[in-house]
Structure formats: structure tokens, C-alpha cells
Length: 94
Length: 318
Image 1 (cartoon, rainbow over the protein chains, first blue to last red):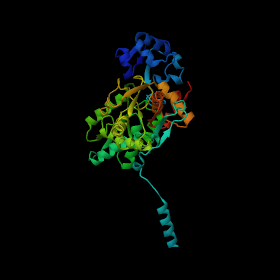
Image 2 (cartoon, chains in turn green, cyan; image 1 turned 30 degrees about the vertical axis):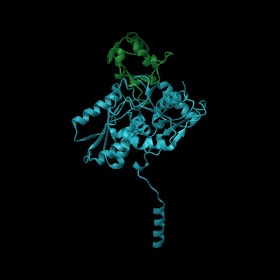
Image 3 (cartoon, chains in turn brown, cyan; image 1 turned 90 degrees about the vertical axis):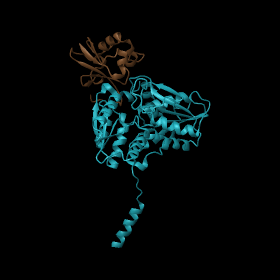
Image 4 (cartoon, rainbow over the protein chains, first blue to last red; image 1 turned 90 degrees about the horizontal axis):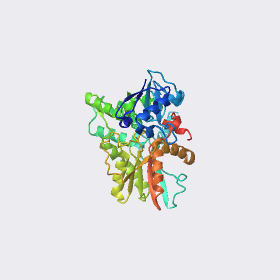
């Protein structure tokens, strides 16, 4: 299962969890399953049209998924996916 | 021949007008927002204080310099001691700039997801950087700075921008008087983003003393996860010690998407190439201005857009 790491500001919307184990083929599937379990996370991650909000950066291990295949990026069992706020814009060095 | 050289040297020396960096802090221009405000009632005017004209490029020059000078004045720095603080960028750049000028070593704690440009600028200025877990955000950096200052009090002077009253006093002493003078005392509304809250607190306290009827509006991101560098969602973050929630008459919440969109408009319609928090300030100021029949609104544009260029999402038309 992929480990989804939740940043501090979003933990209140995920029952206080910092890590969530989710089964999913790609990033979108992992996020959708997480939101099914924690629906209050949705508005912080997606806009009204269902697009990932522009400042929500998702890092698969060390890589921003925007530089991979976006939410279609495939995931392996041991992958770690981190939700990182774009506090200062730019490409973060995690 | 010698007398000619002496004369030339005299002329050259006399014609040089130089300034120290600290003497150039403040006295920033007040720019009109004519295009984005062209639909407003003709009796309503909107202005922004262009803080990127400060020497290190942001509004943070004012509090950083005041914190350093007050600490030196009170003998709070020992020889070789490092100035320590947590920062998401601009305050660190200001500390590093004046630290270099005044010969003070600077250690900064910032989340590792600070933009590449910021980290490069801080390294270029010679600051020592300690990067914290990006998942913990700016609050993680604050906690780390507190911890280090307790562990090694001899090594560090903890500037603590969030709790240091010399932060808001810088704005009480400089930004507030400048705005009053630049508007000929005609300002009716002051709109500013809330980060440490130093700008809003200091300017509001000064303006209220001189214009008791003035309305003060604070600007915050609309949620705990946001992309507005420098601003805090107070309800979910560690509240700065200098923040007094009774200072603003009201708070306007602005989304990151609205701020991004406004940053692009300001660049393309006004020629003001500004950072994201300036976009938030402009969105809120425009919202207030649209409610009015008459008034002169002033907001603060904290920095320019250069440090945000690597954020491709910001510059993309939605």
C-alpha cells in the first residue's frame, strides 16, 4: 500500500493522522480513496471543477508529480506520496 | 601634473553621493491601481505601497532592520553571536542583507519547500540555513528556532519576528507616517495581509491615533493549506505573540487561486510585477473598494515577483 503523508495544517481534516495507508494504482486513485474516508479533505485539495488546486504539490518520493504524469502517475506498493503546500512557490527540495 | 590630479580627485569625491543600505529602508512609493479599479465609483481611489523598493526587495527590511538596531542598542548581541530566526523567505533575506552589512552572522530556519530562488538568495548572502520538514510548514520552522535558542542561548540571539514588538514598531515609526503623509491624511481604509501581523498592527496603531475613523482590514488565506507565501491562516497556525485580533475591524479571506489570478492581472494590466501576497492584498482591497461610494484605500504590496518565477502554476492562465 502507498503511504500518503498529510501536512500538519490538514491533519484536523484527516482525524489527526500524519500517515494514511491507501491501496491505489495511481495518484488519483489514492487521493480519491483518501477523500472517501476523510471527505473534509476534498475542498483543500480540489477546486469546484474537480481539478487539483494549483498550490497543492504532491511529491512521489522526491519528485513532484507535475513533472511526472500528474495524477495519472503510477504508484508502487512501497511508494511514499507527500502533500506539500507550495509555501513559496517553485520546485521544492524535499 | 600633481595639482591636476588633486583637482580631479577633489571633483570626483565631491560628485559622489553614496548611501548606506540601512539608510535606504522605507520611503517607498505609493502607486495607483487605476486599471484594476477602473470600474469603481469615481470618488473611490485605490493605492498600493510598493515595498519591493526597499534595499533587499521587500517590506521585511523595515522590521528586520529595527529588530537588529534595537538589539544592538540594548547590547543584546554578544561578539560573534548569530542572529537566529525562522522565516519563509523575505524576513530571512532582509536579516541576511543587514547581517552582511553590519557584520552579524545570520542563521535561518526555513521549511525545505521554500522556493529555489529564496534558498539561493539566502546562500548568496552568506546566511547559514537549517531546513525543516516541509510537512510541518512554517510552524515547524518556528518550533525548531525556539528549540535551538533554548539549547544554545550563548550562540544565538533569537530575533523572533513573531513575538518581537520591534517588528510592529518599525511600521508604527515608518510605514504609518509615510502613508499618512503620502495621502495628505485622506486615507479612509487600510488593507494589509496578516503574516506576523507586524505591518497591520504598526500601521493601524499609528493611523488610528491620527485618523480615528479609519477602517482597518486584515487579509488572510481562506484555508489552512494555501499558496500565499508570507500570510498565515490564523485559525490553524501558531498565532504570533504580537497579533492582537481586535486590531482589524474586519478580516477578508482570499483564496490562493484569486491571488494568483490577481498577480497576473497586476503584471499585465498595471505593469506591477509583484508576489503572491500582493495579489491577495489587491483582491481584498478591491472587494472593499467595490462597496464604497467614496474613499481612499491603501494596501501594501510586500514584494516583487522575481522570487516566484519558478512557480509555473502561478503564471499559468487558468
